[in-house]
Length: 238
Image (cartoon, rainbow, N blue to C red; front, top):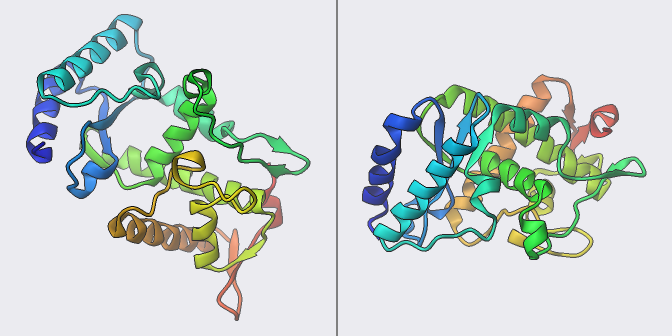
């Protein structure tokens, strides 16, 4: 498909009726890679009526059909097409990772219909969308950036707590994002970060560096002489 043309067509189709929300494009299409479907979602500052959600789901499915695109509802649209502010705040307050015996636990992804339709999966996808490269096609880009910063702090805290590391190098931290240190699960079966494009890897590395600098400014992390980073123990706790 002609990615840029398809994205513009979808944006133009929904912008008038849904311009009170922010439209986010994520996935490989952001890098100019031609894919079989559009990875898009909407962020809304207010709750959405069932009728409005159903209309957006219908328009999105119809758009995919008319443009010969695959409809990827492995995670159903009910769980990923619209994220309200309340849902985003709930995810930040109660991340989709259980806290057991003084550490966060990253459960394996289960490819069952029940799990992929669960609130936990919806929250995990939200954190991934906010921390991978994404484009704001219309809406409040500044607000999305704030959400992204918050999501990065949560993800960094989760992987360090899970791996039981208080001191890491940048490369070690990045490895914990890509691969479960215990089961060695990767990609969609872990946190969703993939190494299939160099551009994705560069973006993730830049994000980690940027967010470590922010955490340094907040006195949450300190750089050692060995070029490792020590994290505040109280910050790593729930």
